[in-house]
Amino acid sequence: MMRMAQPELHDLAAAYALNALDPEDRWTFERHLDTCEECREEVASLREGAAQLAYAQEGPAPRPELRDRILRAAREERPPEVVPFRRWLFPVTAVAAVAASFAAIGLGLWANSLRDDESGQRVVAVNGAPGQLIVSGDQAKLVVCFDEAPANKTYEAWVIDGKTPRPAGLFAGGCRTVTLTHPVQDGSTVAVTLEDEGGAETPHGDILASAGV
Amino acid sequence: MSEYALALAPVLGRRRLTQRSDEELLEAIASGDHDALGALYDRFGRVAYGLAFRVLRDQQLAEDAVQEAFLAVWRSAEGYRRERAKAATWVLTLVHRRAVDLVRREDRRRGDPLDDAPEAGGPTVDEEADLRDKRTAVQAALAQLPPDQRQALELAYYGGFTQSELAERLGVPLGTVKSRMFAGLARLRELVPET
Figure: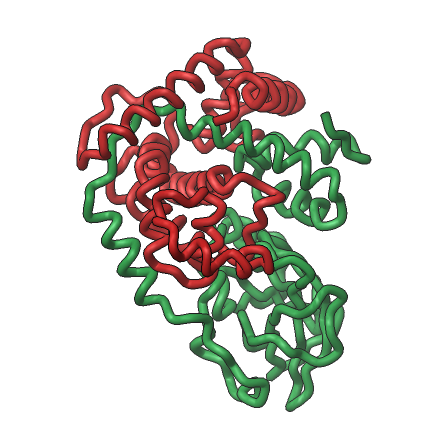
């Protein structure tokens, strides 16, 4: 049996494998997973057990139409839209919704609770991914859900004032709160791209999500 | 797609989709092969829908969950790594996550078993037999778990309850729920024979 360094986090592995963590715990645990190879192995191993449970039920068969529906939807999906860097300077209204369908539910509730907790802050919807930008003075927190980043890649947040994108923090996939490391002001745009591990000083990836301050 | 898969692609292309492993199908899907997505659905659609229906108890919602999960497969197959997870586990984890996300949003959770299993479209006889065997094996494994472990797994996995909701519902400390889930999953993994 694999062990984790921190017993309290270790405790979360089984619930995570069962998709039974509360949103805050899921976030905490996914952040821990980013840095703990042993934990990833443990989750992978527990998930093999969890997936067995899918077979134990005796549910009805799907209607034959479902197969066609899925294949049609897949055919109609455009490949992720490539947004050239120059188009950053314009408001992004229709961004490729690659990650849009993931894990937004718990997050919605969670972001709402944040909104209730603190006063004097603004909550702005994020385009392109499920999530919200929470602005308080010149500080901003991005609460978003993304798919797991591909190997050797990381998500990077940017604050764009005028024409210049500034790095504002790296983060991994899953649902999480990202406190931006660069201040925002009225008129700033916050955007997210996928970059090589370690992040970049200027964005190379397409804009996956954005929000206007 | 990995270099390995790219190198094999011309060879695999000559093989019928039905002869490919689950992992090979996912790699073909990562390269944009719609037929491979269809073949993957043919393999997992039945169990995926059964699972989604078990969690959601509603035909429309179950269909939505399965569709969203297979589209997530379509979009993110490139991120699949066979050394990290079996393809079946990867696909079923996505289906399960969609189903519990939906059931929590709709607040339709219930912990009791399905009363009946209405039949809809038919799988092939072979698929039916394979699934039945697998179901029997997993049910036998579940039956060997201590009842409290089994209950925790079933309420979490099929009921869509989070661990803290489970603790409240069962009237036990959170730590107890955690250790039941952990022990149950670890044991289940040992009990079910590899297929």
